[in-house]
Image (cartoon, rainbow over all chains, first blue to last red; front, side):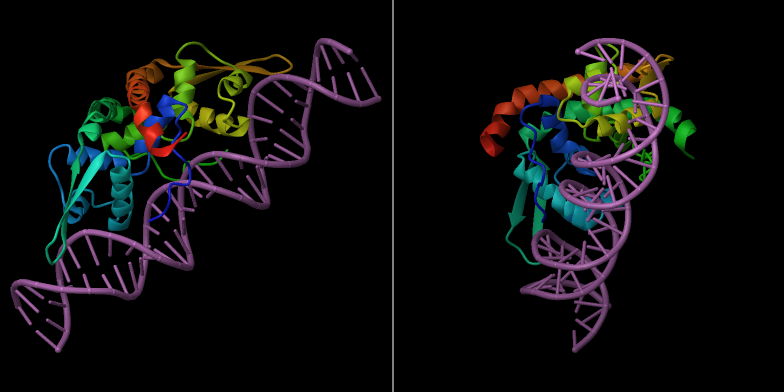
Length: 115
Length: 115
DNA sequence: AAGTATACCGAATAAATTTTCGGTATATGA
DNA sequence: TCATATACCGAAAATTTATTCGGTATACTT
């Protein structure tokens, strides 16, 4: 994997929270795992635009930060499963608020930038 | 300025919201402007770790996205002022939730990573 | 006259993040 | 036997973001 170059900002609570979820797919991963544990391959199916590699890297950081738990089953072919932790669950209201905001304001930005 | 290379993700509401606030200082800028309008130099005083250049760039994007409004006073030396828009204000509950989360969990990450 | 402050922007550089590609290992099914 | 699938990881390349530095212009203060 690659290292977190920028240490988590411990002084500003806002940037602390942001630094845990602001990379490309972390919030989406948490949003998927809130409903059920998933294997990496399932997660990739759920988020097909994310490459397996980036999911791998970001899952590792989420685990390191205590927001996600990894379970390895000692089987072959290998099987592992990622689930959200109780700490991770406390971020769900924030994820939800962002989801809601995005839905509500989608049209505005479509008119502005896209489609 | 430099261009937004990655267009805002219009398909996923979560990533839409994230893309508006996930660069280094945008959430902090909104958190400052919620209380009062500020001039660029004041903002830099409030967020001394951010370089004036990055504040400048991110303010410009915030204005472009309709979250912040810029007022230029036709004076010399030049004066301008940035204020949060009503759309920007609707993001404040999310900012607040992140602030709260960060405060509540600060100790955990200090033990883990720092100090 | 020189220094300071204002806001802003261009461009080079540096740094961080993501993508792409290939490789590890093992078991199952064709 | 060979293709497929699993999870994972290293490394190079590409991309995105931030920093650094210098420059625009003007007015006020020393």
